[in-house]
Amino acid sequence: MTSPASSSEVKYLIESSEGNTFDVSGAALRQSNTFNAMFLNIGADGPIPFTDYNEATLKKVFEYCEHSVNEENYSGPKHQDDLSKWDLNFFNEMDQKMFIDVINASNFLDIERLTSYCCERIARMLRGKNTQEMIKVITLPTAEELEAKQKVEEKKAAAAKKVAEKAAETAEKTETLEELPVQQLVQTTRNKLTRKYLSFSNE
Amino acid sequence: MEAGDRHPFPLLRLSDDPLQLVVLLMRRFDQFALSLVSKRSKEVVKSIGLSSRITIKVDEEEVSIRIHKRITENIRCSFADDQVAINNLPSEMVKPTVTSTRGRHTFTRSRKGYRFEDWLSHCLEVFHQSKVTTVFFERLIPHFKSFRKTFESFTILKIVREYTDEEARDLLKLFIPVKKLYLDCNPFTNKDENNKLLQEVFIQNFNHLDLNWRSSLAIDNLLIMNSKVITISSEKLSEHVLNRFIKHWMAGSNPRLEYLELSSDDDRIINEEAVLKGVNYQKMPSTHRRYLENPPFINNPDYAYIDGGYDVRRADGTTASVLFNEYVYFVLVVLN
Image 1: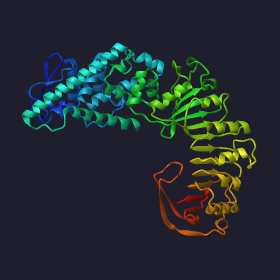
Image 2: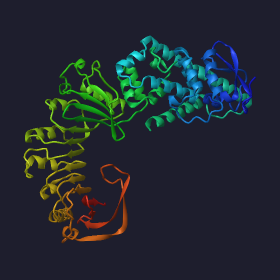
Image 3: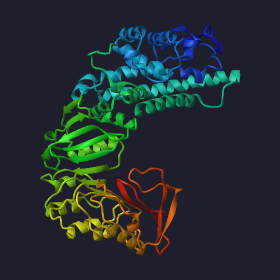
Image 4: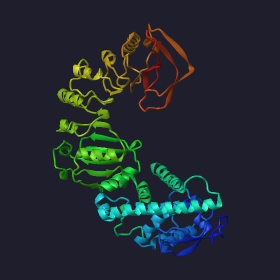
């Protein structure tokens, strides 16, 4: 069951890569700029397909969103020392693979707070390391892995296009979709995020 | 994943956006260390658009590439003398020490295929600079002619100690042309102000010539200077010399001059009447403020203003304002 979100009680169905569906509150989903750009005003006809990410990853991401529903608006990266006990537990209980999956999913969904906390965590891990130490810490990708990454990026772009097409179809039905292409909306929110960090970094 | 996780982390396998965010959130020293890991990591650091001035300093102990953040130095790559000559050593032997400004972090590293010039290119590339800003010389290194070949153009040459006449001549010959020349002393052993080698330097067309002279300066040397901006800190010049300078300027000398600033620690008060004796000038009231857009001052401000002043005019209509103060005791600003 999905409908235009206006209150936290509204639930949306999310579809994972396994084809499984589960529901997420509108309040949690609204932390995703990608969702806001694509579905917030128009609603979704059927489950929202985030099929590039598995159920465990998506559930983890939305667990974070549900938890931070009542937090004040995001205003830039937070120092890791200022994280709450809940936040620390949330990060600590993930293994590395899950952590990377969460970053990538959070990045696609454009959830600024979660993406920035994850990235700050990695930046902190590399703090004060010299080049030799960094080489040990950051396993360098092989040529095959780089090729695989390229394929994943292409696949993601195709998936985003698919989501965008689906959103456009929905928009046609509701006749409320603005003219701006969804891909462009996604890119705009990403650019906004990058600009935020750029200005933060140069301060 | 815990903050102190010791498992290798596949950073470069992250998607492009979060990877860039991680690098943006890193400290400048860490970003630089990361740029040295691999070609891919260098490209990632480049992609976030960092911008830092790069300078080269030859001091008593080492030759260093210095990376600045705003006005302060942030990272230093220090090389031994024999590592800065072109093609002198195999790259494996070129092992600079990389230090963060506060000395909190340091590492020594060679990079395959990287000699001094490659390290410099790396810094310029990562920090998006087309050239070195300043080259400082506190001493002469053994292979300075070869060292000169390790980089191309730069903006400012700063020399802070004297050499033999021959060394100073060779040094200046090799490193000029340059847009700005800062001399913290007369670099020649022969201190005679009529030293032709010194005069050959003064007649160059610099955008900015800055002299931090301990001794006095002859009027003839002042008159042959051909730079747009001249700033001189020296013994105070006499009223007679200043008077002669104004008259010569009005008659057409120093045609490129846009701004002359003379300063001194000497607390002798300048007699303004004596400086302006016989000069046709117009005194502007101190309440009369004039704004200068993009003035040719050292820090390139967008605008500046002058209050009052004595306006003097050349036959070709060029007007300048003469100002007197305490530490900066004489200023001549060309207004049009």
